[in-house]
Length: 203
Ligand code: GRF
Image 1: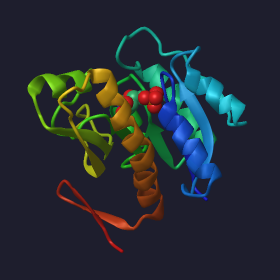
Image 2: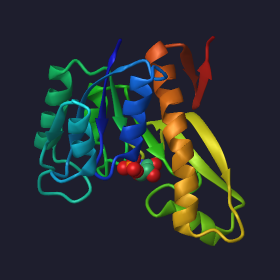
Image 3: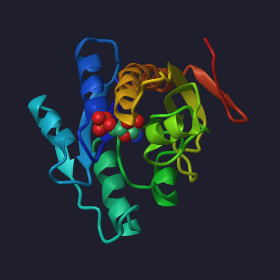
Image 4: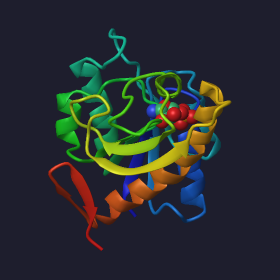
């Protein structure tokens, strides 16, 4: 079984789903560690509760990204644990070239909208305000463009007339918990090819 790691900054409900899906056999992976840039992240607590190694690696001086020396610490921690696939799950830092080069096509992210619509933050509110009738969730490879990598899988969620950003976020999250496992299994199986921007199953 290949090693994965989850990087999370916050409450970690996607992490929870990953752990549960590993425990129930739906996700065929070994969770080697959880790393956070926030010492008090609930995600770290969740990891410890499930006897998964929880590492806090301080983010350094910048607000939205990790300086090269800090990125090097993340890379070392992942390599020391023989991590094959890095799964960002609410990790609030932009991943730069050094990190991307260390894990080519081996870093995934989950986003609570149907990319390329609504990249960035507060996207449930943005989708509501724009008036789209469907939003959803996207799992994609991470590249140098924020929320811009090749798409592995998506799930659509209808927007209801009486929706609020919170209610919509809750329904999207349920899809996130499901599709992250689908995408991780696909990458770990190796049964896909990338043509242009398209990720295509080979079996
Ligand atoms: C999710 O909505 C995810 O799509 C986004 O950040 C949120 C993380 O939630 N990238 P959680 O920490 O997994 O509960």
